[in-house]
Length: 432
Image (tube, rainbow, N blue to C red; front, side):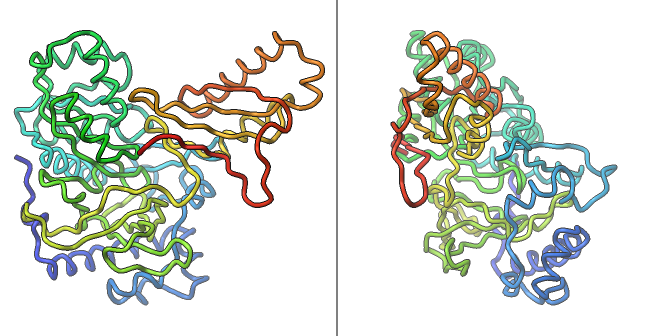
């Protein structure tokens, strides 16, 4: 069992001392990054001005745009000869958000991912099937190395090829499944379609994240797969999966405060909110070497609770993420911004800058349809065959640019709703 009891059940006063020690080191490290130095000097604050955890709000927030503006390695606090891995997530202008890890960072990540898997019941005797995407996405490798650190046997199946996934589950005796919740439902539906006897599978639990999912979806997954479904939280800018994790009591996700310092703020005023109030989650890393993040605005809407958990852990608990404060949508575990879609669409002269994204859930998988108006000239001159060629080209460009499969519908000019205020680009019909 990978059980760091001395840290997960730490006395709250001892935790504050540990956080303060680690925060001082992190602030001094971050101050060597030109971006942080400039931002803090403009705010009139230096690391030595932060004399306790209560002074942290004196520092300015860090936004995702800082990572894009300093692409690719401008936010790194160590030289490249100390960076042993790079991951990246989608960017709004075609450039990804790049994150780097030292060997020390990877060791901590593996520890926390192992800690998370243990909370879901994994042991060194378990077979863990990782059906998150591998590659630049942090999900696959993050859970993979956590399972290895735990001593479990890892099946690195990645995503897709669903019948083969199920064959591996059956033949290898998979006990723990790690993937997005929507893919878990799709797996369940396929198992039913293939008429596979559920008793032939050894599945006991699932570790699901990378997209919003409701307790109703949890119940559906548990009923269809006959498992206990656990929520895991993470984001690449902070580390990846393993920032917070549910225990068996499922009264919220235990936030690993020995490595990450959470705040909840009013997204409009920037003021810190007390525990129990809903707001935007802000995270400061306490042990990251390559990419320290200071007061990073996640845009995730959340609530924190500090009442003791029946499991004995004293770490603050994070309610299920309620949504986002910006217009980003998550489709099949991939972040999609309307501006990403717009930048791809507007490279085509045949379409107008009026579009909308329609997200629906068909069965257990999310679908994204991009509706875009063609120009007056196009509708006058193009034949049906030409319009279909335009649609296919846009679909190809969007699939490549976004990293997921989308459908495209061309609509006539002035079909989509206009507004004098902010345009409503996203129609989300999922019941999350």
